[in-house]
Image (tube, rainbow, N blue to C red; front, side, top):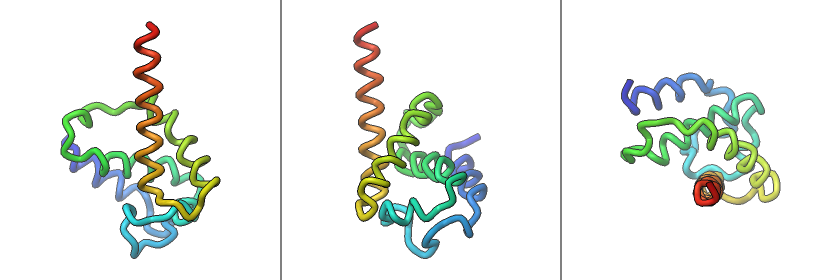
Length: 109
């Protein structure tokens, strides 16, 4: 399955009614917009946004489940602390933090 097909499937899986403001592109959402999504849909939205953020990057060929499980609570917690901040920036910062932690752990091994 190609990345574009996977992204489309995930996008379809997140019902339009679950989004806080479906007229605004996700890249322009605030954390408040993200937190307006039902709790059950937040991880799916993070999966989708991560795929969008890394589109065209060959590293996306694999899915980092362990990293995803770490980044989801980071993003949710960071957004709760600063609801007016950019969701997209919190997503990117969360991934940088997780990737740095993973590299640090690899060096220790």
